[in-house]
Image (cartoon, rainbow, N blue to C red; front, side, top):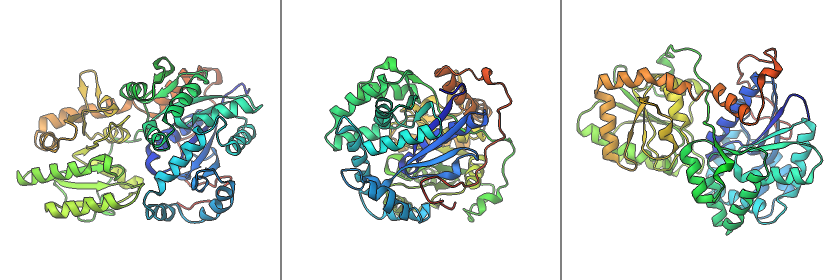
Length: 464
């Protein structure tokens, strides 16, 4: 093995797993800044604009590989290459026009990894080829559920490496394992894969650790909590309000902005926020509601949001995906950011990002997201009773009308968010696998990351 570790990240590049991708690439970029050699191996989809210059990117497999029950090299390498000539946004729209497309694909992916003792052998062979080409000795698996690829490569190849698993949304894969009739095999193989790593797997919150121990029967001694990290803003100065006007031209100056920023999917509970907004409208509490973010499984829920807002008679400034500049300006200029999820969130990247801009958050009292907004006696936001739109409205009213409370929470936000910085995450991961960066000195540090698009080996370049 190399004297200085070389890392490769296997990550799923978009869709419902975008938050996990952001976490993985944030860590990859942080390690790259420290002078480590890093590669990213994309599965199903790619998101090259997230990755810093100087990081090798390769396409491990495309979504077309799993259109049928058996993985298809032809659909992956030939048809997939042709489809990747289509820009990313258009590919996503095409996929969303076929109900059940993503679910079928992921059922087939899980089947390929858990139906037989030797998972997707051609993909394992390709992974081994890339590991050798890039001289990787530390393989970082984005999900525990895709860990069978790493274990099979370790057992069947000659290239020496170790792998580290991260659990950060694997309950979704467990759902697909149940649907495929493979849940018993899934739990048994997960334990085998977890035991096959020299390091305990990472879980991204204490609540999530408890959850996967209960639901997947994993050994709690083989799991370690390391929180996700985000890139903190370089300045505490607010971006110009005019940036928001480019996406939301009808926003008014002087009226509090309440924002939802995240995926527009049914489990995110945006309808609860609409009901709460209606309750505040009846109470004549002024606010401007902004909802924006991607959708991975079709635009049906996004249409429901628009129709429900119209039925309730409330004004919503509604958009899909917005640019990072608009998103950051929205964080900075919002009175608060609300994350009304009805799902037991493993973590809460949006909450951390909002607090990093000095903005209090409102989140459910359920799941790992509650661990994000507090440190000791200090809080950077409030919680509401999960699934309860009336309590959501009450807590939102407090944030809108109680100046002393809002000021106190605001004073805490940046310090709490700093606990979840990309550098804190990188420190924790390196310590976990026994890498002491002092051995390598400071000369390997690189300047901050660039967002300039790069080509990916094995896939046509996708314009931003």
